[in-house]
Amino acid sequence: MSFDLPTLRSFAEDLARLAGTEALAGRRSLGTGTGRTLDHDTKSSPTDPVTEYDRAAERLIVDAIRARRPDDAIVGEEGADHPGTSGLEWHIDPIDGTANFVYDLPSWCTSVAVVDANGPLAGAVYLPVTDELFSAARGGGATLDGVGIMCSGASALSQALVGTGFSYSAVRRTAQAARLARLLPDVRDIRRLGSAAIDLCFVACGRLDAYFEEYLNSWDLAAGVLIAHEAGAITSDLTGGAAGSTMTVAAAPGIHHALVARINDVDS
Image 1 (cartoon, rainbow, N blue to C red):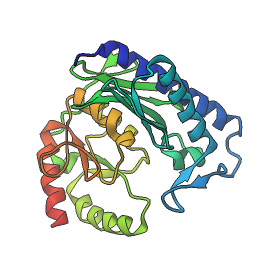
Image 2 (tube, rainbow, N blue to C red; image 1 turned 45 degrees about the horizontal axis):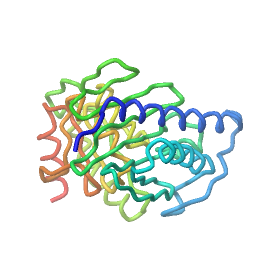
Image 3 (cartoon, rainbow, N blue to C red; image 1 turned 60 degrees about the vertical axis):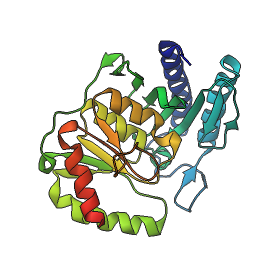
Image 4 (tube, rainbow, N blue to C red; image 1 turned 30 degrees about the vertical axis):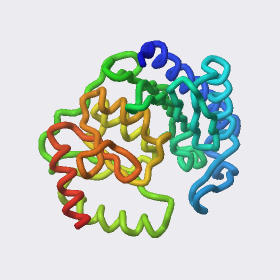
């Protein structure tokens, strides 16, 4: 089945920018530098926040997709679950990095991707605070604000700046911290920005040399993995398979093998 990839990509860009802009306006309406965090509920754990702005941004995206592409399926972080018959499914994260959003930190984004049976077809990640739009389409390259991007040329793991993230589960975080303590001496340094989609886009444009994280959901990674891949990064799990919830690794080609090998060694 063939699809109009430029149109899907453009639509994903529009959706990400629309919802992200609305979420930013809502956050800014509360003021900055107020010394208080945003009121919020929690989901999977007491440290996993969700706000009214997450839900409103998801509704905005869902309504736009259903109006323009009613036969497509939709899966959203905040509960959207609409079946479809077109063979396409939208995976949306209205605010990836909600904890940052709550604390008025800049590292949060809106992530929108459309996938078929073979994986992501097109996707966009919009960073409202910096007004940056990353996007990609399968076989069509990746861009930042319409300009082509490529991952870094890093060739030595010891000189690599590596991003990662942590689970909301305290038990899982304990194991992840132990892994990180063993990995840290083997790389230039570690960054933890708090948004998987942003981390993947930063690999795509060379702001990070690599990124890895486990326990991600489809809406966390669908757009970002495609953008990183189309920018020349290698994306995978730890066994040579596709990036996914078990593990997502995205890295410059010159260090991908070494990073995967080192993570496997640390975990053994």
